[in-house]
Image (tube, rainbow, N blue to C red; front, side, top):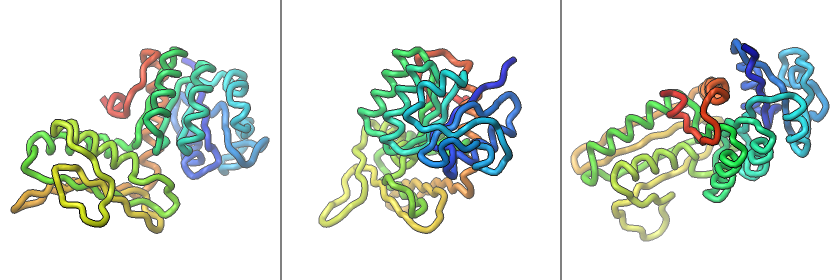
Amino acid sequence: MANVRVGLVGACGRMGSLIVRRVLATEGMEISAAFDLVNIGKDIGEVVGVGPLNVPVSDSKDLAAVLKESNTDVLLDFTVAPATAANAPVAAAAGVNLIIGTTGLSAEQKTNITEAVIKNNVAAVISTNYSIGVGVFNKLIRQAAIYLGDDYDVEIIEAHHNQKKDAPSGTAMTAAEIISEAMGGKDIKSGRDGVCPRGKEIGVHAIRGGDIVGDHTVMFIGNSERIEIRHQAHSREIFVGGAVLAAKWVVSQKKGVVYEMADVLN
């Protein structure tokens, strides 16, 4: 069976470099294309320190042509919302499957990407977090929300490094949406300021500082007790492992469908 041929957007960044290394260490996968705003024309293997791979870094404006010429099977994108919103439909139109881990996508951007996936009959995994542990975390908070119901207030606190651009994190908002659905449709409120008496909303709060990889705590608070469910990421490797797993998985799935990380784990 032929190797899964992997392309990356943002290949020279922190996540991109880790993904290159993980793909090379994964049987049945290889790097076929790399895109970034820097190091154009340089070999991506030399850029990330693994030796020459004969895969030059290309400009994203050449995305469609390079993906087709390289016979890329799946494109991974962990960049920023405007770039992902522009690049994902182009990749889908080129017949390339998608793994998207970019956070901060608007509802309109998500809809446009989904429509491109369906129209071009490719498969995609779109997730705010590719950690296997976060997959379990989401299952636990869903069950807790079902059992505890309206008798408990819900607050979510997330913390990330000081370079993260969007807030609250996509993982925190996914957690809030899971709990809201399980509790029958609660409102979600990001932060509080001034006079704001607590109602039945789910509160979401963001902390930014230093080099925190990613911490998420969900608090179910009753009148006489409090339950906390927490996930702490110690390294970006946890996201890389899940993303590469998803990339290998998605190429053999039914086309014209957008999947979640929960589908990959199942």
